Image 1 (cartoon, one colour):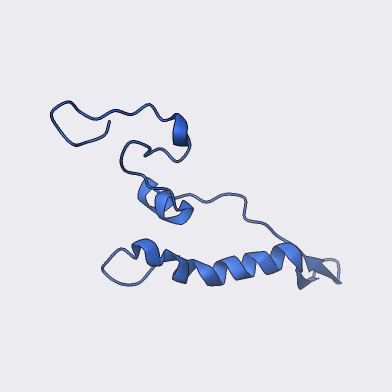
Image 2 (tube, rainbow, N blue to C red):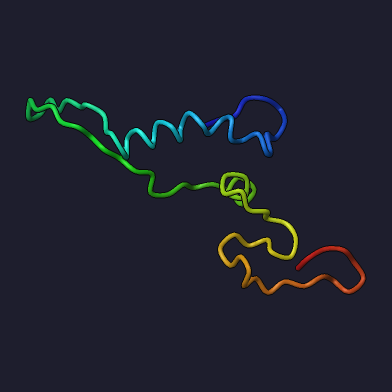
Length: 92
């Protein structure tokens, strides 16, 4: 999905993801009537989102995890071994 506009949506990303989430929930719980032309058969198709591919800033926005600071790794979370530079304010 491409979000229109020159600026980053930041916390408003939910507005763009809400229709997708609603559709995925319908596909998972209810399913959608689907026609298979090869077998001339109609069935209820269910689906799930297994993974997404994106860069770290987009991953942070989509997951709701802050990717900056001491706990900047969304995979390691609390086990992140980070520290602040002695004469600076940046986390490493």
